[in-house]
Image (tube, rainbow, N blue to C red; front, side, top):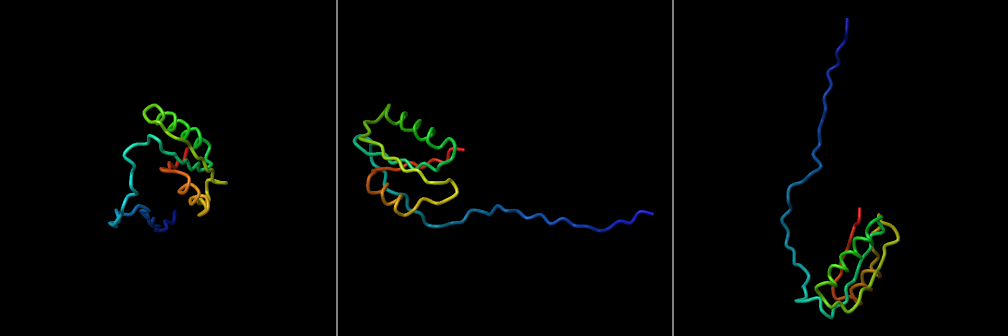
Length: 100
């Protein structure tokens, strides 16, 4: 005779509902003409290719003054404060890419 064991399965939902919080967006320039664009490369496989493609597209419509690139040493580490400070000091706008 077969023995049946009562089992249960507990399902956890890892998603959370939206969290209401105050958020102020950084100021946006009216144009990118004459601006320096900073790029933060996440070190993922396609991040730099994605960023380079974005810059090419931006250059079609804007007279960008220059491009500054910083690359994280690894994708799983956060950008250092020094790296972010350099980007902020040397760039007018910054674009970050994951590149998966």
